[in-house]
Length: 186
Ligand code: HEM
Ligand code: HEM
Image (cartoon, rainbow, N blue to C red; front, side, top):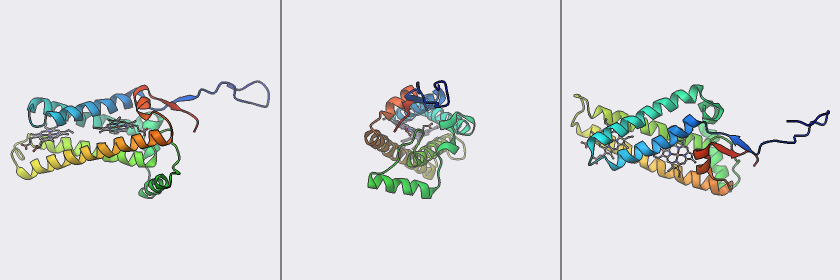
């Protein structure tokens, strides 16, 4: 809101901005839960493992659609950047000079894509193991197992990146993924 007159000085700029819409937050924590349970039940509870694995796959499908038509910071166009931009951002991190972003930063955006792809590929190979063509096929079992481990590794790096960015920019990014809001100013 501006004050009257030509000066136009802002007098009530909100200091918090809505970044992550409810669907993004539901998707994120649903993914953490479904992948976590799928991991923990992999060698013991087959039905639970399969249903939480399917849930993870469905969440990725929903998020991919939301990346095309969703709110501003949820869109792929807001955070998918060229490899050159991602590498330049990583170099900036190395120099301790990386910019703060309201949405995903270029490196975080690249990680989002890797996590979505790894989750989709893990769920897909898991489903294939239940089909007549691939049931009991060893190389498919190994591929599913490998993808699940790649996913776990990526999630570990992702959490490390979230911690680093939270520390460097003095903000609670986990809180932002829960409540949806971030500080507007740098
Ligand atoms: C299986 C484990 C995990 C997966 C697959 C995962 C996946 C993702 C994905 C896909 C996003 C992008 C959100 C979107 O735009 O839709 C994201 C963002 C985020 N995740 Fe996770 N995540 C995992 C675990 C965690 C955990 C345990 C935490 C908390 C410690 C966390 C904190 C965050 C935060 C804070 C963001 C937003 C990052 C930013 O501000 O740019 N994630 N995660
Ligand atoms: C993203 C979700 C998923 C994760 C993280 C995951 C992870 C794993 C892991 C770690 C194993 C153990 C492999 C081993 O110890 O040899 C496994 C096995 C298995 N998973 Fe999944 N999985 C997921 C989704 C699915 C889905 C959707 C299905 C099918 C509906 C499925 C079906 C299976 C089957 C049949 C096995 C046993 C393979 C064998 O006989 O060695 N998984 N999964």
